[in-house]
Amino acid sequence: MPPRPPRRRSARHRSDAPSSLRRPDDSRTLRRPLLALAVVAGVLALTAGAVTPWILARQAGQLDDSAAKVTAYDSVSKQVDTARERVERERASRSQTRVAPPATPTATAPTPKATKKATPKPTPKVTKKATPKPEPTRKAAPKPEPKPTRKAVTRKPVVKKPARSSDGRPDFALPARCGTRLRFTTYTGHAPDDMKIDFFNESGPTDGMVVVASAAGTVVKLSEPGGVKIDHGNGWYTLSLHLQERDVSVGQKVGQGQRIGLAGAVGTGVAHLHYEQIYDGNHDGWADTPGEIVHSRLQGVLYSVQPDSDEPVVASTNSC
Image 1 (tube, rainbow, N blue to C red):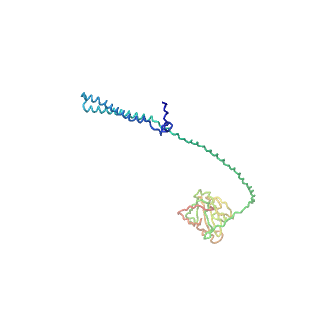
Image 2 (cartoon, helix red, strand yellow):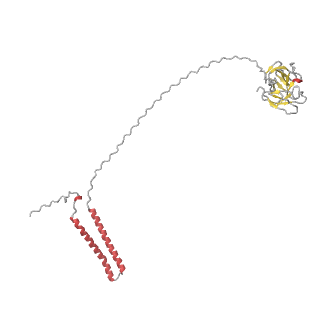
Image 3 (cartoon, rainbow, N blue to C red):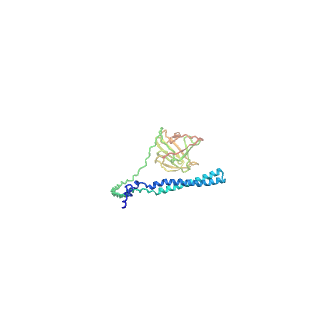
C-alpha cells in the first residue's frame, strides 16, 4: 500500500495560532479522573493501614474502647493530612507548568529632557554722573567806613535841681553813701532834742565814714566844730558837724550824693555825725535861730527822734 498522506491540521491546532486560542490536550483531560481515582485509592489504603493495627490490638485485648478510638482517630487524621498535602503540592506544580501568555510589549514614550532656560543677564544700570554744582560767588565784603573821630568835650558838672516834697523842701536822702546803714540817736539837752540827730555807722566804723550831700545845693558856710552848711534853695538848708575832714569850699555847687568830708570826733569825745534840717522862716538868708530848726524828712519819712526811745536803723538810698 502506498503511504497515507499526512493529515492537515486545522488552524486551531497550528502552532502559530495564539496560545489563548489553542485547544487543551486530550491527555490532560483524561489525567484528571485518573488522578482523582488515585487519590481515593490512596486514602482508602491509608485508612486500611491505620485501622489494621487498631483491629489487631482490639482483638488482642491490649487497648480498651476509649484508647482504641483515640489511636484510630489520630492515625486516620494523620493519613488524611498527608494526602491533602500531597494533593496541594501536585496542584501547585501543575499551576507552575502552565505557559503564561507572553506580555505584549508596550512602547514607552521617551521622557523628554528638561531644557535649561537661559538665565537673562542683568541689564547694567546706567550710572548718572553727578553734575557739579556751581560754586556760589562770594560777594566782596564792603570795607567799613571810617567813623568820624569825636573831639573830647570837657563838660561842666550839671547840678540837678532837687525834687521838692509837698512842703517845698527838697527830697532829702541820708548823708551817707548808698547802702550805708545809719542809726538815729539823740539825748536830753540836745535843744531841741527831737529835731537834732546824731548818726552812727552800723555798717562799719563811724570815725572816717564818708559824708555826702543830702541834696543838691551850694556850700554857704564852713563853721566850727567841723561844720558844712549848704543852701538847697527856697529857704531850705542842711548843717553837718564834727567832720574831721572837709572836702568842699564856700560857694561850691554840689550834687546829691557828692562827697563833702569825713565823719570824726571834732569838738566831742565820740565820733559821730551831727545833722540838722533848717528852714529860713524870716528870710534873712542865715537860718541861724533855734526856732528855724525843723523835724528832718529823709527818704520820704518825717522823723521825730526822742531821748531814751527806740533808735531806728535805716539804709541809705542816696545816689543808688
